Length: 343
Image (cartoon, rainbow, N blue to C red; front, side, top):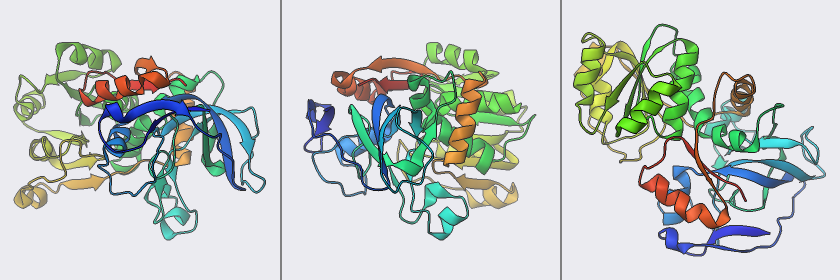
């Protein structure tokens, strides 16, 4: 098979397309012919060696896979059969620890992510645990499935499961042009919340409005916190969708109303942020971590896509030779929505 591979950590210049042995399934694995794979910021971190996970080289990235089942292992616990169209739930889990048994697969004690410590989907074939296969509803394309299998899943887990967003609440969505941001706008609007979204250019702000944002803030030219206070009559928002980290943390917390909830799933600008503890207890704020999502949540997201109630936002598609270009576009924050590789 062909795959986009790196043999050493570094920049996009380390990526190359080459022939690799076809993967062979273990007893509980499945082989998927990759028809689409989303590009995620995690791929950039893995390629540059910025994760804490030890992995063997050469390595194939790509954690947001959709495709067709080629083969299923002899002991696989799944009803999915060869030929079926599937998405691959990206969070790998043991199924035995206390968190798995309580339904929290994404925080499994032995957890992993497709494309992190094992090879991923920037290839024509991928080996994955068969239990992670989620059948695609009729009418959902491979590109659409790849676009929602991690970013939209993450946004759903953040807003619905973790933050418990309710109709009529105000929600601030940071970085509307990202995969999580563009999905969170739609999910919040679907729930019935009032959405305030931030982005860096007039073009991205216009796209955010098209997705359903009621109000937009240009964080490059305007003071985000002052604008939130103006738009909410100094009250603040009920929920902040935070995935930027250090650069926005203090203002995100300050933007919350009393009894407000901040839910965070990433730290692309850094992992450390100052916190005013007086604000935390005097306003009864809740700071909520959120990591990934479950297979059940992915099934829900895919059903909503099939029903037309969630619309995957795809910026561009690339072949295996274009993985480096796609990762550069992401690193430079040039996209609005998802970047998809079609092997």
